[in-house]
Length: 314
Image 1 (tube, one colour):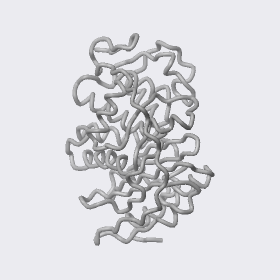
Image 2: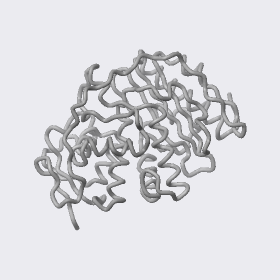
Image 3: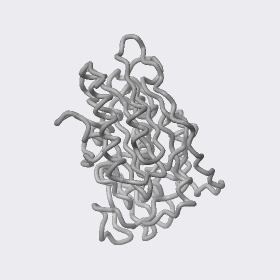
Image 4: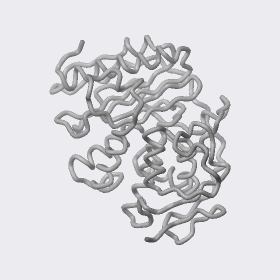
């Protein structure tokens, strides 16, 4: 079995993309809020859907995008192109980078990388207590990063593949207003929150590409097989505090949540292998009450699901 081992900032055996040096561009500030936009009118084949008042109830600034699998515009687009601190939702792009490497034959799930001391931080349920230099398979790291949001696993993957490679993946996915500018940290000061940024529209576009690739057997951001595999990983996310709380019990949701100070985010594909899947992204900033933020995301999910899968707007 060919194995890649991370040693001193390079990858042996050439099994993974060459590590790139960190970018040094000056972070752009996250913009102030614009007035809440009304939802984009839905195509006539879909029920009318308005979540503006639910957005207004969330004590902070909220952006929402809802996309079905059709070719039309988003069903809902509120602050769709505004930048938000990504928190852990940007791990979607890291995962896509890994699976693109699988497709290219430059990596495989059984390849291993060694952790660096600098990458071992808090918020790491799987890698907690791991010593520097321990080897972990890429498959284990990806699942830890997505399913329990393990930050040390995420940092190890960023180091292994390179920050510039992740940013290149986002550009290929059309995420032109999003950027990974730093590793994850135990504490993120306010002035560094603008280094990892995403928009609701960019994030919805990446999830749309993953779902479309899996459903229609198309090569999108990755091969159909990799798109299906990414959905399977996302379905294992155990965080039910946001989108999932607003869905009927048992509804499959392939999603990634994110939390840092003043931020609660969730982005996912609801019922990805069902008859009427859709993409829902809710991002927040300047959130003053976390419980209300989580409940608000759940309320949005409840209304969207009722409209798109159950034919009700209530």
